[in-house]
Each structure stands twice: as structure tokens, then as C-alpha cells.
Length: 178
Ligand code: GRF
Image (tube, rainbow, N blue to C red; front, side):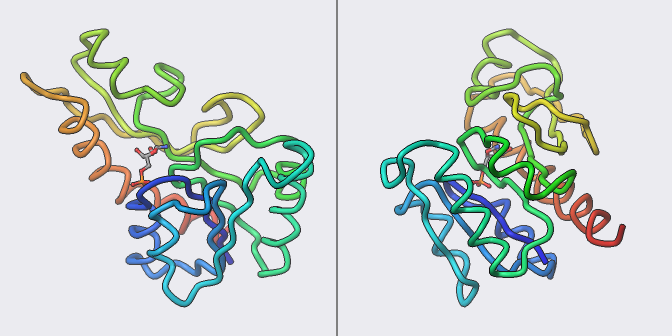
């Protein structure tokens, strides 16, 4: 039973759904996240920081809701907030993230732009277990993606996402089977 956290467009959520994985809940830190519209009949909820006294209170409410939906594994699919122990301790070793670089290189929200600015010849996609850090935590799978002459942030990100959409469902399927 998988819960997915989203903030943006949700193409990775779509890949999990298309792979037939048992997604039972989708939550966001943004009420207006376009990704929520992809959930169809799957229950969704928004947990905006402004509605709570602090981050721990928000995270604990979000964990409560996911647990009520039967969630055992949490996938961050373009979720753009750090998670506190109030959340992570509720799903030990069962929160995974997908990131558009060969971690530990280029963590953070601007990884694609920073890789192009640094002139790297190779980028990639990484799926890893989540801890309190920024895109840190044990790496579960990683795949290289070429940077091509003339790449823009959008063109490179699209090429990386094509890999993410295959890699993330593979890893999540393995986690479900363990
Ligand atoms: C992906 O590139 C993911 O690696 C990063 O945020 C992006 C989310 O894209 N963490 P989407 O919302 O799944 O389309």
C-alpha cells in the first residue's frame, strides 16, 4: 500500500499509476499542485504548512492521514519540502525519493540547472531512502543520462524524467515485495 507525496506536475506519480502499483493515497504540501488531478478516484489531501503551528505538526498530521489510508510505503514524487522525524519515524526505512542527478552530486531543488552550469558530461536519476537531509540517505538505484550539446534545463530534465519514470516504479515494486 503506497502513499505518494507530490508538489508539482506529477509525472512520476503517473508512472507509478501506469505501472499498476497499489497507490492508495496522494498528499501534497500545495493545495493547487497539478499532480493531485492525476489521482482520479484515489483519496487526496493537502497539508499546507500555513495551516499548522509548525513543520512537525504538519508532518504528524500528514503521517496520521496516510496511515488511516493504509499506507506502508511512502514515495516522494517531486515533493519539495524536507520531512521531519515527526514523519520519518512513522515509516522507518520506507520513504523513498527520486532525484534528477547522480547523488550525492547536485542535491537540492535546482539540480538540473546546476549540472548544466557546471558543464557536466553526464547526469542521471537516483532513487534513495529518505532521511532528514537534503536528498541524502542510502541510494537504492541510480542510472546515468547523457548531457547533449545544446541541452537546456527543460530538455535535460525531460531526458532524465524518462529514466525516472522507469526506475522509480522498478524500485518501488521491489520495496513492496520485501
Ligand atoms: C523529478 O525530476 C524528480 O526527480 C524531482 O522533481 C521532479 C518531479 O517531477 N524530485 P514530477 O512532478 O514527477 O513530474
